[in-house]
Length: 104
Figure 1 (cartoon, rainbow, N blue to C red):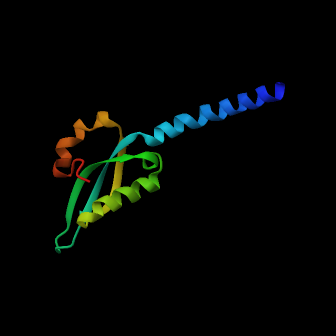
Figure 2: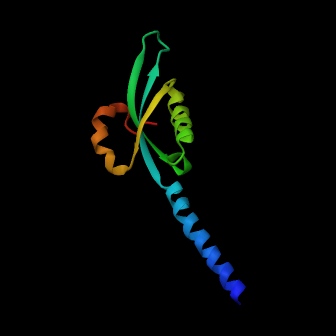
Figure 3: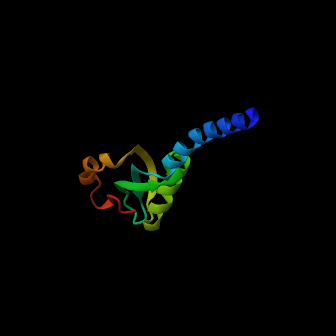
């Protein structure tokens, strides 16, 4: 009986550590970024805001890959991810992002 209780307690501890991380991985986050495009000869730059979900919110490398892939559909090249933030930070960035606010 003691062994069963020990096993159950250990399992509860593991779940207590894993479940919050899984929930965080499923939540959405937002990032702002800078990108460039030089296909027409003249260098063009833009500042944008994009919504991400899942593991990209907690993995910087995956975050950059996802942003790069999404903006690449219009031949933009990611220069830099500036910051990661939650929904509450959207309004202050809306005007600066203009047409690139949640476009991708």
